[in-house]
Image (cartoon, rainbow, N blue to C red; front, side, top):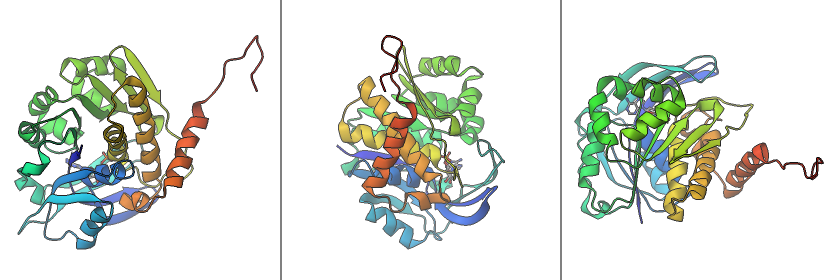
Length: 311
Ligand code: AMP
């Protein structure tokens, strides 16, 4: 019951109001597979790195039990490089540089033994690549996709084509607005459903995330954190936690989707406390459980009985 992850593997330059790192490991595939590895142990990653990608970072992914036999190494080109700069509120950012490099030649052939994976997480990559991957699958049960403003602006029609074939889209609020032309997020979710996916997840940064499924809406909060250093990868970590939980439980009931929202939010909240992938390097089960409890306490309340509080 593998979870197949496709995504960028990057070297990122990141600027936040708290500092700058250069050529730190990142990418949607890296964040998704690493965060999913805390919830599920049969993860296969498809991606491409360039000549400059540090070997020890591939070893790190292996140490998380992630099968990287589908990660290609470009013989000449450098690794995909993204330079992002966050504004003071950390909810908005500018892409200063996007150098596709090795990624430009990425044309994934899914290994035969990976094709029957039931759970698929299509991280933020060129929608044409997402579609090519979908076309090679033999037994998909749940396909989730993510995307980003870059692809909405460059390849909107291809993105619409890909959306027809997925069950879940995970997207942030500004991207949902850009994709649909709807300012209101409920209207944007409705419009996205018409385009294909039956489940819509809209991430709202420090304001949590919304799940739309049928006529149901579920809101996951974001934990008010004192130390947020770098939001890079928060959306991907969310997607990894979400799909890792779904794959591990093999259950897409509404109640379990709600839990997936909380698991995704919990791991994303841990990821943003350090720069790049650092927050996800070595997490103990107890630190994840502690975070889950914080989420529970944040929103748990009882209605009063006979006008009096239960406590
Ligand atoms: P997130 O903060 O979850 O949206 O993901 C940030 C990650 O996306 C970074 O580590 C970047 O390397 C990666 N990224 C940025 N731009 C792109 C792009 N156009 N295609 C694929 N991955 C990208």
